Amino acid sequence: MEHPLSDLVSLLMRLPGVGERTATRFACFLMNEDPSYAKALGEAISTLHDRVRLCKRCANFSQRELCGICADPHRDSGLLCIVARVPDLWSIERSGSFSGRYHVLHALLAPLEGMNTHRLDTDAILERIRSEGVREVIIATPLSVEGEATAIYLAQQIRPLGIRISRIASGIPHGGELEYIDQITLGRAIAGRRDM
Image (tube, rainbow, N blue to C red; front, side):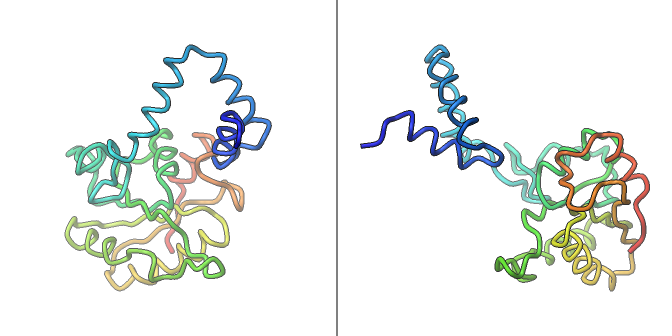
Protein backbone atom coordinates (compact mmCIF):
# COMPACT_ATOMS: atom_id res chain seq x y z
CA MET A 1 0.00 0.00 0.00
CA GLU A 2 1.31 3.42 -0.98
CA HIS A 3 2.00 6.07 1.64
CA PRO A 4 -0.58 8.93 1.52
CA LEU A 5 2.19 11.49 0.93
CA SER A 6 3.56 9.43 -1.96
CA ASP A 7 0.08 9.33 -3.48
CA LEU A 8 -0.20 13.10 -3.13
CA VAL A 9 3.25 13.67 -4.66
CA SER A 10 2.32 11.44 -7.61
CA LEU A 11 -0.90 13.39 -8.20
CA LEU A 12 0.82 16.77 -7.88
CA MET A 13 3.48 15.71 -10.40
CA ARG A 14 0.75 15.43 -13.04
CA LEU A 15 0.29 19.21 -12.90
CA PRO A 16 2.11 21.09 -15.69
CA GLY A 17 5.56 22.29 -14.66
CA VAL A 18 5.57 20.37 -11.37
CA GLY A 19 8.40 17.88 -10.95
CA GLU A 20 9.07 15.52 -8.07
CA ARG A 21 10.92 18.08 -5.92
CA THR A 22 8.21 20.72 -6.26
CA ALA A 23 5.47 18.16 -5.66
CA THR A 24 7.27 16.96 -2.54
CA ARG A 25 7.64 20.57 -1.33
CA PHE A 26 3.90 21.13 -1.88
CA ALA A 27 3.01 17.94 -0.01
CA CYS A 28 5.23 18.86 2.95
CA PHE A 29 3.80 22.38 2.97
CA LEU A 30 0.28 20.97 3.20
CA MET A 31 1.31 18.70 6.08
CA ASN A 32 2.72 21.67 7.99
CA GLU A 33 -0.30 23.92 7.39
CA ASP A 34 -3.46 24.01 9.46
CA PRO A 35 -5.65 21.06 8.37
CA SER A 36 -8.44 23.49 7.46
CA TYR A 37 -6.32 24.77 4.57
CA ALA A 38 -5.90 21.28 3.09
CA LYS A 39 -9.63 20.67 3.48
CA ALA A 40 -10.50 23.97 1.79
CA LEU A 41 -8.05 23.23 -1.03
CA GLY A 42 -9.46 19.73 -1.46
CA GLU A 43 -13.03 21.08 -1.51
CA ALA A 44 -12.12 23.73 -4.11
CA ILE A 45 -10.53 21.09 -6.33
CA SER A 46 -13.23 18.44 -5.89
CA THR A 47 -16.08 20.84 -6.71
CA LEU A 48 -14.31 22.70 -9.52
CA HIS A 49 -16.09 20.90 -12.37
CA ASP A 50 -19.46 21.42 -10.67
CA ARG A 51 -18.94 25.17 -10.20
CA VAL A 52 -17.11 26.12 -13.42
CA ARG A 53 -18.26 25.41 -16.97
CA LEU A 54 -17.46 26.62 -20.46
CA CYS A 55 -19.17 29.79 -21.65
CA LYS A 56 -21.70 28.71 -24.26
CA ARG A 57 -20.59 31.49 -26.63
CA CYS A 58 -16.81 31.70 -26.39
CA ALA A 59 -15.73 28.60 -24.36
CA ASN A 60 -14.04 30.69 -21.65
CA PHE A 61 -14.31 29.33 -18.12
CA SER A 62 -17.41 30.70 -16.41
CA GLN A 63 -19.73 30.19 -13.47
CA ARG A 64 -22.72 31.17 -15.61
CA GLU A 65 -24.02 30.34 -19.07
CA LEU A 66 -22.14 33.37 -20.45
CA CYS A 67 -18.78 34.52 -19.10
CA GLY A 68 -18.29 38.08 -17.89
CA ILE A 69 -16.69 39.14 -21.18
CA CYS A 70 -19.52 37.82 -23.37
CA ALA A 71 -22.13 39.29 -21.01
CA ASP A 72 -20.47 42.74 -20.99
CA PRO A 73 -22.44 45.04 -23.34
CA HIS A 74 -19.49 47.48 -23.48
CA ARG A 75 -17.22 45.02 -25.28
CA ASP A 76 -16.75 45.58 -29.03
CA SER A 77 -18.62 42.66 -30.65
CA GLY A 78 -17.08 43.59 -34.02
CA LEU A 79 -13.66 42.37 -32.87
CA LEU A 80 -13.17 38.65 -32.26
CA CYS A 81 -9.87 37.35 -30.91
CA ILE A 82 -9.28 33.61 -31.28
CA VAL A 83 -6.97 32.06 -28.70
CA ALA A 84 -5.83 28.50 -28.08
CA ARG A 85 -6.37 28.32 -24.33
CA VAL A 86 -8.07 30.21 -21.51
CA PRO A 87 -4.74 31.35 -19.95
CA ASP A 88 -3.99 33.06 -23.29
CA LEU A 89 -7.28 34.97 -22.99
CA TRP A 90 -6.42 35.97 -19.43
CA SER A 91 -2.98 37.19 -20.54
CA ILE A 92 -4.45 39.40 -23.26
CA GLU A 93 -7.03 40.74 -20.80
CA ARG A 94 -4.26 41.63 -18.31
CA SER A 95 -2.46 43.59 -21.04
CA GLY A 96 -5.47 45.94 -21.28
CA SER A 97 -4.92 46.21 -25.04
CA PHE A 98 -8.08 44.52 -26.32
CA SER A 99 -11.73 45.49 -25.84
CA GLY A 100 -13.42 42.98 -28.12
CA ARG A 101 -14.64 39.45 -27.53
CA TYR A 102 -12.89 36.08 -27.62
CA HIS A 103 -13.24 32.53 -28.84
CA VAL A 104 -11.22 29.80 -27.09
CA LEU A 105 -10.24 26.78 -29.19
CA HIS A 106 -8.99 24.56 -26.33
CA ALA A 107 -6.76 22.87 -28.92
CA LEU A 108 -4.32 23.44 -31.77
CA LEU A 109 -3.79 21.47 -34.93
CA ALA A 110 -1.25 18.74 -34.30
CA PRO A 111 -1.76 15.92 -36.84
CA LEU A 112 1.01 13.76 -35.34
CA GLU A 113 -0.89 13.77 -32.05
CA GLY A 114 -4.25 13.08 -33.70
CA MET A 115 -5.43 16.69 -33.48
CA ASN A 116 -6.80 17.25 -36.99
CA THR A 117 -9.10 19.91 -38.41
CA HIS A 118 -12.27 17.97 -37.54
CA ARG A 119 -11.50 18.51 -33.83
CA LEU A 120 -11.62 22.32 -34.17
CA ASP A 121 -15.14 23.71 -33.97
CA THR A 122 -14.83 26.17 -36.86
CA ASP A 123 -18.61 26.07 -37.43
CA ALA A 124 -19.15 27.83 -34.09
CA ILE A 125 -16.61 30.51 -35.04
CA LEU A 126 -18.15 31.08 -38.48
CA GLU A 127 -21.64 31.29 -36.96
CA ARG A 128 -20.45 33.86 -34.42
CA ILE A 129 -18.86 35.95 -37.17
CA ARG A 130 -22.12 35.97 -39.15
CA SER A 131 -24.54 36.47 -36.27
CA GLU A 132 -22.53 38.99 -34.21
CA GLY A 133 -21.50 41.29 -37.06
CA VAL A 134 -17.78 40.66 -36.61
CA ARG A 135 -15.69 42.96 -38.81
CA GLU A 136 -12.23 41.68 -37.80
CA VAL A 137 -10.89 38.38 -36.49
CA ILE A 138 -7.56 38.48 -34.68
CA ILE A 139 -5.88 35.10 -34.57
CA ALA A 140 -3.78 34.97 -31.39
CA THR A 141 -2.61 31.38 -31.38
CA PRO A 142 0.97 30.74 -30.17
CA LEU A 143 3.82 31.42 -32.56
CA SER A 144 4.71 27.73 -32.73
CA VAL A 145 4.39 25.19 -35.54
CA GLU A 146 0.99 24.08 -34.21
CA GLY A 147 -0.15 27.65 -33.60
CA GLU A 148 0.85 28.75 -37.10
CA ALA A 149 -0.82 25.74 -38.72
CA THR A 150 -4.00 26.50 -36.78
CA ALA A 151 -3.86 30.19 -37.74
CA ILE A 152 -3.46 29.39 -41.44
CA TYR A 153 -6.31 26.88 -41.33
CA LEU A 154 -8.63 29.33 -39.52
CA ALA A 155 -7.78 32.11 -41.98
CA GLN A 156 -8.67 29.81 -44.89
CA GLN A 157 -12.03 29.02 -43.30
CA ILE A 158 -12.85 32.66 -42.45
CA ARG A 159 -11.56 34.36 -45.62
CA PRO A 160 -14.70 33.59 -47.74
CA LEU A 161 -16.74 35.74 -45.33
CA GLY A 162 -14.89 38.81 -46.62
CA ILE A 163 -13.90 40.30 -43.26
CA ARG A 164 -10.49 41.45 -42.05
CA ILE A 165 -8.31 38.67 -40.64
CA SER A 166 -5.21 39.59 -38.68
CA ARG A 167 -2.52 37.72 -36.79
CA ILE A 168 -0.83 38.96 -33.64
CA ALA A 169 2.46 40.67 -34.41
CA SER A 170 5.85 39.21 -33.73
CA GLY A 171 7.77 40.30 -30.69
CA ILE A 172 6.67 37.15 -28.95
CA PRO A 173 9.43 34.56 -29.31
CA HIS A 174 8.81 31.58 -31.58
CA GLY A 175 7.39 28.78 -29.48
CA GLY A 176 6.49 31.29 -26.75
CA GLU A 177 3.33 30.64 -24.77
CA LEU A 178 1.14 33.72 -24.36
CA GLU A 179 0.55 32.86 -20.72
CA TYR A 180 4.21 33.63 -19.89
CA ILE A 181 4.72 36.77 -22.02
CA ASP A 182 5.02 40.10 -20.21
CA GLN A 183 2.11 42.53 -20.57
CA ILE A 184 3.98 45.17 -22.57
CA THR A 185 5.18 42.69 -25.21
CA LEU A 186 1.73 41.13 -25.41
CA GLY A 187 0.09 44.56 -25.70
CA ARG A 188 2.45 45.49 -28.56
CA ALA A 189 1.71 42.17 -30.27
CA ILE A 190 -2.03 42.91 -30.19
CA ALA A 191 -1.60 46.53 -31.30
CA GLY A 192 0.83 45.55 -34.10
CA ARG A 193 -1.21 42.69 -35.50
CA ARG A 194 -1.05 42.16 -39.26
CA ASP A 195 -3.47 41.07 -41.95
CA MET A 196 -3.30 37.45 -43.06
